[in-house]
Length: 256
Image: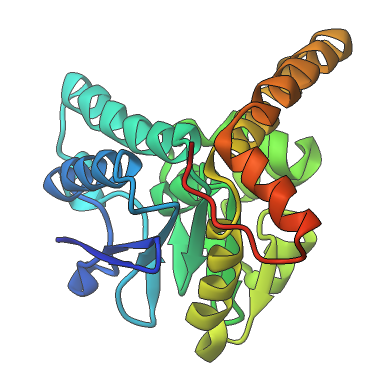
């Protein structure tokens, strides 16, 4: 099942299938997409956190027992659901953090790479073992990991299929922060609350610009940045932020 915990404008989306190290089968993947769609339009949620239940695994990939027995057409349908989940994470107009509490392998790492930030427990292990199985990662991770980690690191992880520690993943720029396992939730919570305290519209536009920046000409990017700046200054949140700055108080943003 997919469990959600919503509190203080944060939504924890928790993959809960501990008997299979939170590996995703079709029903679970379908449910995950539904939950992500739900929190994406919930005005009470400003930051989404994806994690796995228990201490052993974030998401240990797609369920091999299921897809290994599928026809090519069934596999394409299964892949489409994985791509949809990754797209929802990447395109959501809210920050999304992957709290990697254990194994993030195959499809699990594919989904983590679609999040805005990846924060890993020091006990976590990450990898794309598809090459060891003679298959291809089908949820869109290849261009994402090249964009985030660089061509060399991406090829190393893809071609070797090896698992790496959280510290090695951080050196490869696959992970943004590594923290002691017992501090992971508190660390993620603190960072998410800092994001949630900011103006939602401004953050959403920053996320969109950041995601598009890799494929924009500099002149186009500069013009778009100026346009978004001008738009943002006219929002109620911007007026509140400026007033709070002048009055030396904390702003109260309403997403308008």
